[in-house]
Image (cartoon, rainbow, N blue to C red):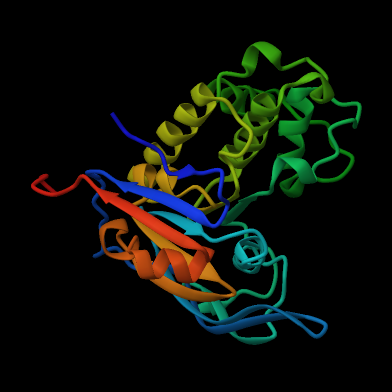
Length: 276
């Protein structure tokens, strides 16, 4: 049985328990997003410095770091929402200088206005509004697409409930349903597993795995080392700069984790002798 990373009473100590991981990544797939020496500054404050990474088709990538490490900023750069200060971010062979139709972004749930008086179905349909003339009503085909997305996240029975009446996990499912409507080459998710129950986490993992198998590149931000170990093909440790990137078996070392998160790291390795 998997044993999660545990944060002890002493916040400076992190226990990282490594166990067998069966994930394998298709490294032959071409990169869909690349960054080269990317930097982002907010005024005089540096959010990211010298970030060079590749995100490949069909790969699930965990972006890990402490609060304030620049994870959300990096996702927003890839989504075309935040401009770079130096360097470049590319989607395939062109620079990203604004939102891309083929890149979907799911923000943190806490950043949404859940008191807005619309239903779950309407909230999902609004994702199609980007491709619909402003004053045209959604047609039957579009409504069915939205209901199908809600069925995928097991929320179709709440289609007509006001979004403010939903639990945290249900709200996160609505966000994912919106993304599924437009999901193409890349899906970016900011802390999708935070504050949701275990069934919702398991549903998300299954859906993301299915999307990756169809060729979608998945990148999600998290601070949960064990979640990334269990679900990601590739991980990137970031704390304003890239500390390390690659398979968890290579990246999750005491030195890398300590450099990224600070404090003292105690590692128990149960992978010895396991088939990799």
